[in-house]
Amino acid sequence: MLEISPFLEHFPYLGIFALLILGGIGLPFPEDGTLLLSGFLISHGITKPLPTFIVVYFGLLLTDFFLYSIGKKYGRSLVEHKRFHRILSTDEKLLKFEEKFKKWSAWFLFFGRHFVGLRVQIFLTAGVMRMSLIKFLIADAAVEPHLYLQIQLRN
Image (cartoon, rainbow, N blue to C red; front, side):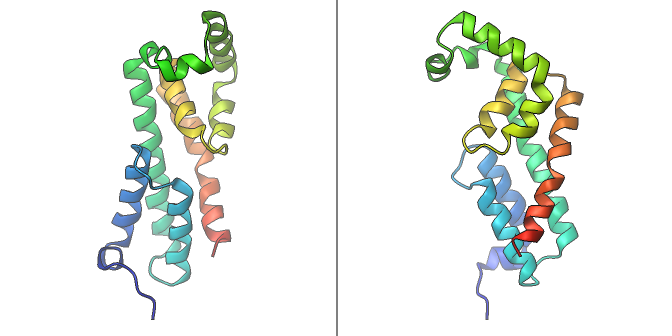
């Protein structure tokens, strides 16, 4: 018999959602691990595919929006922080990056999600660069459905 924690057994959808949110705010719960767990729960009949997809989809959108909001609220002070300063050490580099981001921002979001270690920076940058909220949500929401396919393929 499959043994899982009592919380996950009684509240699997809430557990998945909580892991996504906690991972989105920086705790060590990687998104891919939660997706694997979701596929595992579906394959063992603990959760159903459609509700799991809905929970994962909106959990990811919410965490992405949270990162975008932080970038938009704190703006340039984030980019000028010493950690970012090592990457973008001159104003000239920053201006070039801003120019490219404004032109290709939706594509940055679309492809940035797939590169390990860039996800957080891409969504923060979208906020810092004042990408419109509607454009951000549309670009981000268009990426998320592929995750359902990943969950199904991992079963």
